[in-house]
Structures are given as structure tokens and as C-alpha cells.
Length: 348
DNA sequence: GTAGGGTTAG
Image (cartoon, rainbow, N blue to C red; front, side):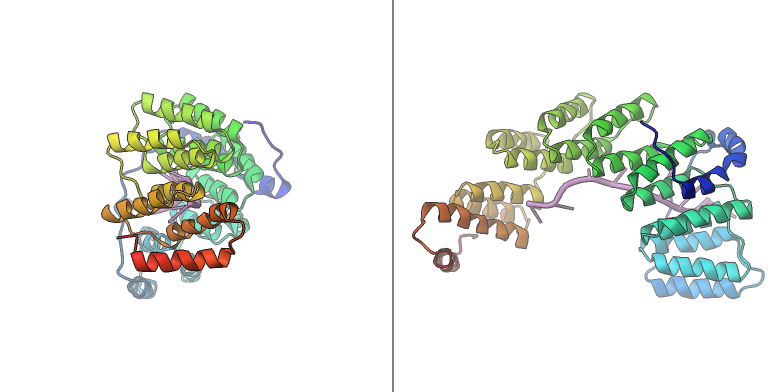
């Protein structure tokens, strides 16, 4: 990946990490993460009550106990709350560690304040807490989410330069960023790079790039990756099928759409509301109201209830009707159509 | 012991 200039604010934080990198590089490769067992709370109030109890205790529970309490709140997306709890912990004399500070970095990033997240990195250095791959990955993700992809790449390069070993999650974050900015070329190359470096891209990673290719009008390349995925023994999921079907449908390749739908059925992959809506949209656009209605019936039989987006597709019929009946007012056509539908109830 | 990512958007 081409290197980009790191802006000065990033340098100031990241350069401070230099003296810590040697120690880290010797440790990072041997660290393995254990499977997560999540603690859960019925509601936020329970967590807060426990937090108050812990804060008031003497001696204070360990930082590990506090992070166990903060993590479920992060999963509940209570980011602002977690930030204020971290502040309260500090004021009560609880010493942070890399886990709790990473939680804080993540909360700032999720709140769209990656700048505060970077400040926490500075704070870590002051406190003598060594950042790790999670700290950097979280910040890189924050930058990607804030559409600051160049800065995300700079930080990625910096972390590698300093001897931090990016892992599968770090690579996936960058891959998402490349797809988000629509850089199809680099996204495909990055997928290859991941493979070369021993991080075998999974179905989601392939899905990210396939979607990126579809959105940028590169259906053939997308289909190539799709074949590659299958050849490697992976089972494409519904998201990938929907991306491809949507792209094919937009190009009017209905024969190809049918081929993929059959393939899904052969592989026992159930169509979802997205798939059905794409199919209905195509029928409506070509004025095939009977097939469109029949598709609604089929999806309902499958237990999938059409929603407002699905029904809205029927209004595309107006464009088709408009082009056929130039003398007819659109309003009249809508009235007739709705009356007819309410009388006949074609969905049942 | 505790922390970070994940593709469709019809």
C-alpha cells in the first residue's frame, strides 16, 4: 500500500510510542486471545448500581473488575455513559490499564470523537501504559468511520514501522476503509496482501470487496472473486448473493439473476426480504405486475412479511404505466390501481 | 481475567 504523509498531530502521538515498540514486538506474537465470555446485565440501572457500589468500596476492586462492568455497557452502545464512568473511576483513584483505556478510546471513536481517542493515546504514554494492537486498531477504525482514510492508513503504517503486528481485525478494518472509499483496485490488492501475510480472508472479507466491485460497476470482477470464494471451499452467504443479484438486476441481467436464485436454492440458502424486494423491483420496472404480486405471495408463504420498501417498489409501475398510457393522468392510474388492489386483495 | 473489526440496504 502506498504510504501517505502523516499529519503533524498524528506524528506527535505516534512518535511518542517509539520507545515502547521493542518490548511490544517481542511480546505481541506470543499473545493469544481466549474466547470471550460476555457478562450481561438486564438493564443499565443494574450496571450503574453495581458501579456505585464498587466505587464506594474500600479497598477498590481491581481495574479488571471495572472493565468487566464497562464492556457490557459498550456492547449496549452506552458510550457517553462509559466515558463518564471512566472519569469517575479516575477521580476515585482507580488506576487504568491498557484494557480500560482501550475501552475509553473505543467510546470516543464511536461517539465520533477520534481526536479525543488520540488524546487518550497520549495519556497512555504519560501514564506509562503501553498501547497495543487493539489501541491502534480501535483508532484506525475510528478514523475510517470518520471518513479520514488517509489518516487511518498513516496510523497503520506507523504502527507497523514501530514493530506492532497488525492482526486479522486490523487488516479487516483497512479493507473496509478501502471498500468504503470505493478504491476497488486497492481493495482487491489488499485482499491478496492479507492472504500473503497469512490472514486468510473469510466470507465477510470477500463480501466487502465483492460489494465494493458491484457498486463500482465491476460485476465481472465481482463474479470472479465470487467463483474464487467457492473454489476455495467457502459457502457464499446471503449478503454476497444479494449484492450480486442487485448489481445484475440493475444491469437488466434477469437471466443471470434467475441463475443465482437457482444456485441459492440448490445450496439451501433462503431468500430474505432484500432478495425478494430486488426481484419485485425488477418485475415492477418491466411492468410485470402479475409476477411482482406473485412474488409477494411467495415471500409471505415463506414467512417473510413485505415492508414499506417492498410495497414502494410497486410505485415504479407508474413509470411503466406512464410510458404506456400517455393520455392517462398518473393520479388516476394510482387511484384505479389502489382500488383494484383493495378489491381483489392480490397479496392473498 | 478485562479491550478492537465484519460485508447487502432492498
